[in-house]
Image (cartoon, rainbow, N blue to C red; front, side):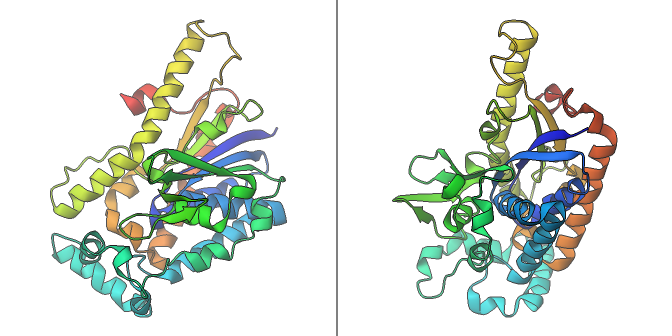
Length: 338
């Protein structure tokens, strides 16, 4: 029996390797068919490579393409470093880790807050550009394979903008992953764009089309809940960022809960609106153990750890909830939203 699902892939910098692991495990299941993908930031990179791999080589090709993507990300170094500093990345990663354990602030993070990327004329380059421009955009924009939606935030309006079809270009993906304190805004069609996580992380509404399945599987990177009270400047800033990047997703979840209640009470005729069945693959315990600064530090050891955790989380989902796909949600929205 084929289980058709939509995927919603969160952003989170290097923590997107968790999504890589989850996708790697899902792709091993011949009964699971991916109908559509909505991705933001690191989720946009995963989404684009996933689609390209599926179109050109099926699940096996998608797994290989995702592995190649994250190998390249691991070689890119700290995203906050200037190009000449990235040559020293293996050494600076260790120095940065030691400094952030000893100091109440992140040195690289503080630099990103104080030095604008626009102040580095002649020195600034987007560390993701070489990776993204190497994607197979013929496959990414193909009518074959899953429907693909990439979210970015319009700087001037603050609204979410969804790129689909032939509009999913290298610039669109770079815009989706554009943290404004680290990267310069990406200009597309006379508009400037920042990271899509500010307006939808990821946006679920592109997955509501009538011809798509009701099941949405969110691969969640940013934890909704942290048990420990943030106290240092780094911890406080990290948690502010997490709350901001989760707020749009929580809003969409509340809308789904509202519609489901109206349908259950008979106030909306069934079939008039999508009765979304929601599923989540996550590992909040692991994500609570990682600092926000590690999102910008894609060391191979961290990426391998996250990939392994993602595979375990997806395997748990498949084992415990496969039978719910097509029948009912595997998460209780009241528990998530309070």
